[in-house]
Image (cartoon, rainbow, N blue to C red; front, side, top):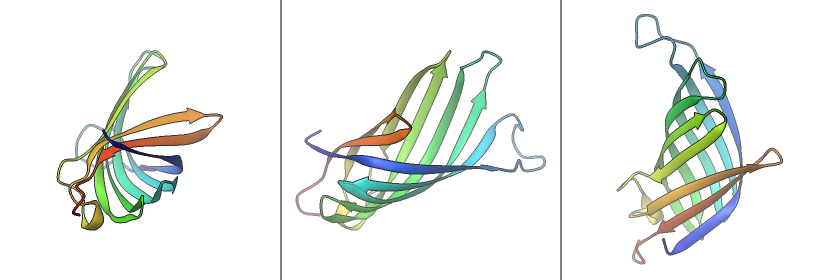
Length: 134
């Protein structure tokens, strides 16, 4: 990817109640709300599905999130697809921009988002490409 935006974000994860008779009740469902600061300034809202295992420190999750804001002076929104696993405490995470999900000044955006957590602070690095004519 040719461009990069870095910063921090706060995240609020709110468990959602299971729906009677719908799906597997062992799958947790959560609402996600984020506030991004830095070279991408904006908000994110989405849904997460997660499941733990009988082995301590092992789990998996998927999530879809719509982020809206300003990226290096260009405003719009795009969707992120999260896929994460934890194997006995070792995390693996992939967060990808959904193809063709960009709107307005972020139309045509492609890329990925890397997340690190240090001293309780969530950091992001967004590696992306954008057409020059958006």
